[in-house]
Image 1 (cartoon, rainbow, N blue to C red):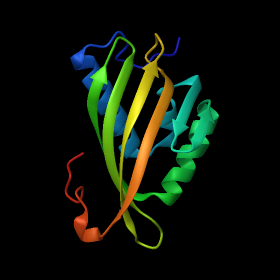
Image 2 (cartoon, one colour):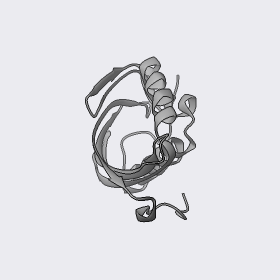
Image 3 (spheres, rainbow, N blue to C red):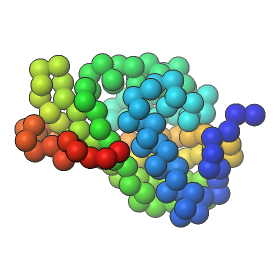
Image 4 (tube, rainbow, N blue to C red):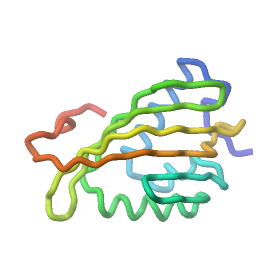
Length: 141
């Protein structure tokens, strides 16, 4: 049976650990590694996209990393229950023309009994920034 620790039910320590593991995985930009944190039948809403299943997650992430260059992310635990976690996040990236962006948002996660994310609902806003406005230049992820 496929499992991704820590498993629910979450407490403050394990919810914080789950968030940090997600942050590290997304900063690796390794689509295969990231996708393994999601259940095979995962459901996402990411901005205006509805994504279903690991294969669609992989496709989404591969497209994301081609567009969002120089990607750096910070996630922060907002709240949790037995099998749900809410996070706030911000990340920076630039496009192929060198325009930098900072994205802000919130995610709501729901996990199955094996610690795999079954549902991910993300609300995200992008803000164009100047390179001199970057926060994560020397950020130790």
